[in-house]
Image (cartoon, rainbow, N blue to C red; front, side, top):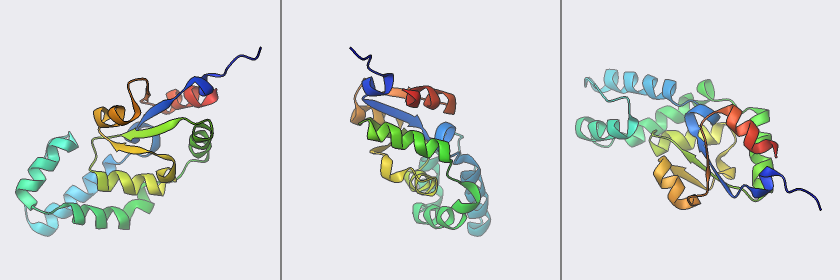
Length: 155
């Protein structure tokens, strides 16, 4: 009887966007600097971007379209696909593994990053870790580094 590989036993995986697929923080910081300069509004936002969203709502109002445009324009400078990571995601998806991505980044920024690294079509859900685990189920393996992804995708 053949032994089942670990990838075949894996049902779902939750990937940390910034640590595994695409570090969105440099683009986020660039946008904060740019939007503060353009709007002449001093923005002292928390490191946690979910908390920062509340401050931005209060100080800037409808800031998400501004972030979307900025991210769309500058994403090619910040994000590059990695052949090995793309192959791992393809292998996981082909094995029937459900893939989610968690981040504290605004959804607009996360979506642009995923598109530019070629992962968007492989990802079922994007959100906070709690949101992603609710969709994928409690048995999802949480991956917080590329080396953890290597092990999970190795099978």
